[in-house]
Length: 376
Image (cartoon, rainbow, N blue to C red; front, side, top):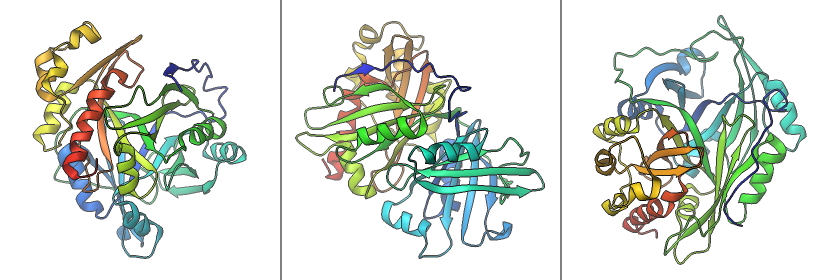
């Protein structure tokens, strides 16, 4: 496989059998939702939005919905053992369970994807309250991760039925995070192409970029990746699989500690990455760091950029350019004790790519962290 930009997807949302309008929310199964919500509010600048639990008639779990601009996280914890949520946390640790997608018609989304081979996770259900109705349906994807289709055009409430507004006296200022840019999945050996075919056949996505082990490699490890995008480009799912190397790759480490396939990281968009990362670091978010030498020939590699080099160097922000423009990006360290889930902060200034020119520097930084954990 060689690096390539696939044929541009000219499918319009009107002709698309699965028109998507973006990510509705990302739901995490966690060991303590109350504490996790406090962490994401404090460290990432989310605000209290909605709550579901025994007080709202939900007896087996609690969920806290938090929001920042168009970015919504849901943090869910079981109240007892011996159920699917508790089993998920026991096996994987805290991690992403649901990548929920905005649709106009959740019934149609379910019918179209399941008839094309999608495995049912949730048949269409209608949730009602005094603010209207939300229709949900869903299918399985890699590992224990699922896609839930969310139709909320007839709902005026704060989040969805079953939740009540969550008002808090503690509301830290936001950090400039805007929406989900993309979500990356790690799959097992030789499983990338089958999942590419799943997204093509079941969800009507296109492979817009491919990277092989010559593109994403260091002296010690490598991986391969393909980027899947829906018709309008609002939803993008890169899929990684391990490749042969001298030592264990970051994907292998993830698969070992997550105990299976899953969502490796969520990329969060900002309009001012310097300001956002400065604020995140001041709140204790830890980021990977590349050597200062990365910046010695930065402008020779990427050409003119609007930003000053020194703040980028101080914060460790990476820069890459494609035919459309350039992007700035930075990756957090894992936010769990297991070396699994992390976040990417990304600012696009025209670029549609994913930072190919930064792969080597980034992966060497990841390997330094792996080595410190004894997992390289």
